[in-house]
Image (tube, rainbow, N blue to C red; front, side, top):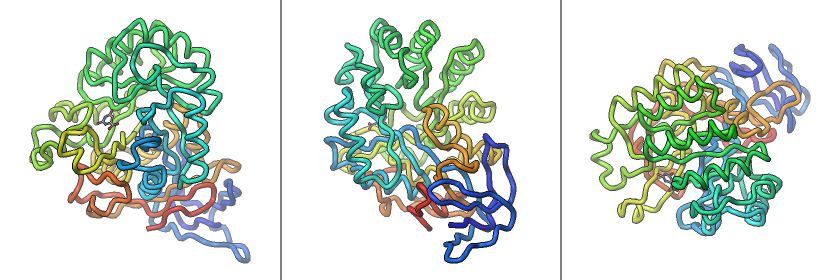
Length: 388
Ligand code: DOR
């Protein structure tokens, strides 16, 4: 297939130019005005950006055990509609992904049923109970790309320190879930002492952004991610009030000064990764206060709305190259020979109608709003999985 006329942005390769891209299951050729070959499919990308496939490193696919909230099919279809060619799925399933057999089973299910690539994140402690470390070597061998008790914070510092020590045998990072700044401060202490590769999920407050910035400045091996809702939405707002109990999310929405500080933390590179924390629940569960929003299908537009002055190369990096590097997975670039995972998007406003989401979770603070950027096509391994 020949992707023609688009503006190719490949941050690691330093490319930002009008270039055509020829793909099979890998990128075959990049050049100006490539001529279509006989029988070759062409995709017109003029007016659009052609980028390395977007990777959402924080997604709750709810499989196994919570298929009323989401399934591998619905979650990964929502992903490709949102421009994602890969997702990393969180371990707070029923049962938790805390052993190699569970990770293997999930990968088997995903290879049979998923619409995009799926990278499992395994639990950090057994049953996510915060008491006993898991077997990180076995989990890593089974394909876990990170370890996290996301949804809960590991409160016992000794357990976390022991987990970090054991997990130092493998490359996959530990991902902290902190609802409070004090929890983050404590986790960053363990990250520093252990030297383990670390990542902070959903940084949500001004203070957390400052803690992350300071830790990185003193050389702690830590990265951070931010959701679009924490960048855009505040607790004391008409949107949040309209959602009522459905506005609940962990970490909670903050104040305007938090959202502003998070946007600044993205601008100055303290936060390098955009991750949706796609956390689908049914309407009934949301009305009873289940925390979380459906994020995959609005992400591209919502992040563009959140920081409209972010250079496009940074926008692309936050959604592709940076998460690929963080998880040590393929992707994040479209140089010749790399996987043909491609996201094509354009700056065209569209109105969010959450009831039309493919995700079974239909709650988002962006419902009814107009977002400035949309996905035009999602290509996984050279195959078009979504086209607007
Ligand atoms: O709001 C949230 N929902 N935050 C989390 O960390 C977990 C997630 C969930 O699993 O529903």
